[in-house]
Length: 484
Image (cartoon, rainbow, N blue to C red; front, side, top):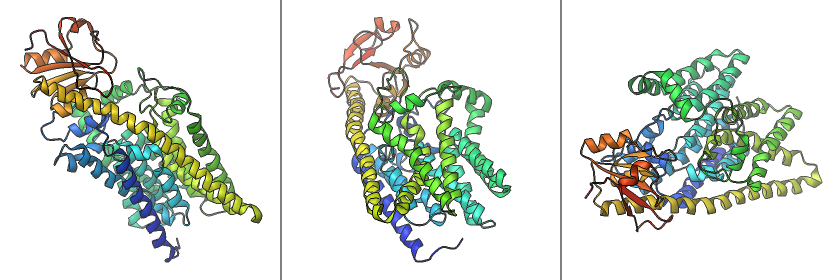
């Protein structure tokens, strides 16, 4: 594919500038936010002196490997945030880079900017979570797939596709399945077998660890798949409404958490995605553009990944759709630029102004969500740090077990084992994990936010307040009846 030599370096520089700004903004905005539950599970697997939290069946080790270089050196949250800010900025650039030879002009940098400006991208960019890297991998895999089709026989696109699929599968095998399924289906339709083989190599390379761990720890892949499905409430569902209500948070829309009401400003930009994407496809088709197939491919993979969550998973979390947003940004950028390009001469200036205003309004909604969500998450997660300090003052030290509300996060700072509870605390019988810890002579503490014992077995335990936890109201710790 011919490419003007003068323009390509310029587009690389613009994309690089978008990535640098993305890394800087996310670090400035979220650098002081402590670790969340899922983050702590991943980070604790490779942090020295911290017992590994329970690693459930749906999780994969990709993000553990990614964060290991930082967490093996230090458990400092600030250091991990800085490290991941750099990695996610590089990930954004590498994800959209193969598209620069698929689609020139301002479309690719604009698409990268639209995705980078989303509150999800900024908030999760330096979180130890797999979703941003699934998004980067999905965009990169689709771009390298198109490069393979356009440049058959070249090893660069083959290596790029294999690497992108490997990373995506390492991060979240289930998301990778739907992404690869879309690419393989397109390759079969075109009777191009090299992309099928290359994507298959990436799936095997990325999924090997998950399969080996399934045999070692879960009784085999089928048993692990069943357990993962139970944890994720997989089945036939229609969760689009929950996803719409969660567009501006909560971070997890799953009982007992409430999804809240519909945030209409966010619903508007969500609804604009298919409108602008379809407009871009229609206008590209009208002008018989050679870029139409690439835009259709991005839209197809985006729709497939989004639909997999709308109809298969029984609950919502905004981050589930990050890969769909990252891919949809490409046809959306096509729609924005095409509408400006096709506006009649007298209306072209007005179309440009309208496009700039629309992008600015979109960015404003993202800023508004961040300005509410980041302080809230900082306050809630700071309570975990405060609770850990109070437990240390009470003499809770390793070896120990924390059980209960936010136990996974608090245990990270106290260096205890943990068993986190969201809703089901147990009944009159002491849970097995607690009995095992007590029999081994370890200290046990149960953290809760209710003065009334949340489980019947705690009625005979000692309740003590945690007065230093001021961020989110009253906290209590329950200690065994004979604890000093």
